[in-house]
Image 1 (spheres, rainbow, N blue to C red):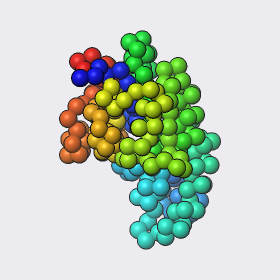
Image 2 (image 1 turned 135 degrees about the vertical axis):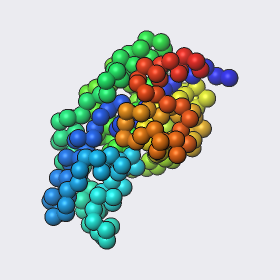
Image 3 (image 1 turned 180 degrees about the vertical axis):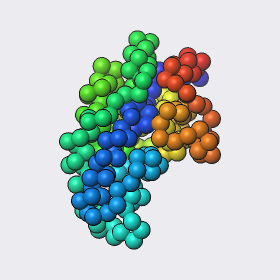
Length: 218
């Protein structure tokens, strides 16, 4: 059995609390198109499968797909300017990454957030620890397809047998399964324990330090 030396993190709801900024940008788009804005608690359920899916959930029933196509660049422009307004790492995450780095772990972030935002946020908060950050972009299938995870492993020089995936949603659980990796589900993110268990979660972390303890056992 290979020793685990690599950790692949999801971004939104796992290492960064991005909910306020995401909510503000989607509501900005809704306002621009004369649609009703939604509460943050509603958006919590929408994020995880990429922004197009979030917009599809947010718009009124019957909204044409062509209109959602028009809304996407409006979101991307607004979020690109405002993705650092309220976003912050969850408490204990920088300390966890520092500890992992000191113990020789390789780390990557893989997200369905747009690639420029993923790279900007990683550079702002985690560049000291995380060497690879991959978001949604042309030419590579987004999660739950395993492609971005596999790309991250290649860039890190690791294999799935040496890696553990950390996420907060059903998309992350399916991504880990598709990539052939174990998944630790965090309980401070966008989904609750009951929902995660319904979607196959077995391993949980109530706080970031639980991740380090779980990795030590591997």
